Image 1 (tube, rainbow, N blue to C red):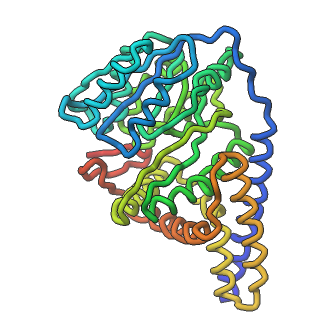
Image 2: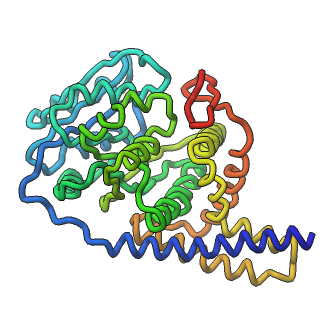
Image 3: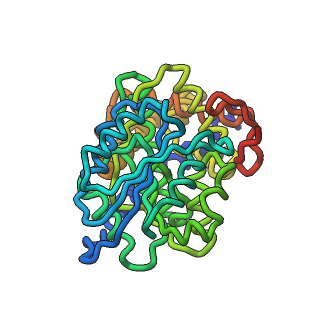
Length: 372
């Protein structure tokens, strides 16, 4: 028991140091100078792969059609005419005749990763060098294209990944997951940026140069990776190009899910993350100071003060990332529940190498690729 207590205490010490680092990382991110709006705004192509009628889809898509930007196009794609999103997309394209918009029916994907397949098809149709790849559940303000295009005017940036503020749906599982995204997940990204720079990308909104994507093998070179966004950024960085964390925060409308749906995709994310970056996945234990503090307290009840100290630092670091960086309200009641739930899913992610993805079962190899 003494050995276990010492190990838990060391892990908790590491988690508290990590929490403090995440505050420093947030301050560094906020303190970095954001580029001014470019006087010469280059043309941009916005790519939108779609599948189904997501909650809030019309408002999400409208936010892209209503960009205050002089020269951009939107190219959207669905698989078949029978997709329920098709009437909405056709109506929006007609409603905004001043916007250059095209809609493709791409058919059944040639490989399991339908999003990558759609993006590859969309990229072939894109007319411009600066490409925005954005999921259907993203909503932005009218100045989005102005702001992200400015980040490429230095001629050095090759890829920018946009931080997102998770906006929950009505279900409790959605609200819990949003707390985890807006705190634990983005604390990890900001801390990685502080310690090692941006050597990866985070969906669901990525802006990149077309020639850079082609230099790493094109979109189809990512078709076997479930975490294609992470792999894209990794390959771009390894090729010697600059990857940056954008200063523009988008809204990620995560919608509502049942408990079964939420648990299934969390397990899938955990297993995929472990296979994509095993060392980093193990290191995620330091992102859960509160569960570790409870374990320390359980092993040694006289150390109750450790829990009190941890709670203060955890809430301070979570508030800094969620409310100050992302502009998302921190739910003080749900946060500890999500911390414990997230810790359990992290632990569960160490077991099993199979996932259910789009109704099919796949095995994950050591590189995080899905093998049917």
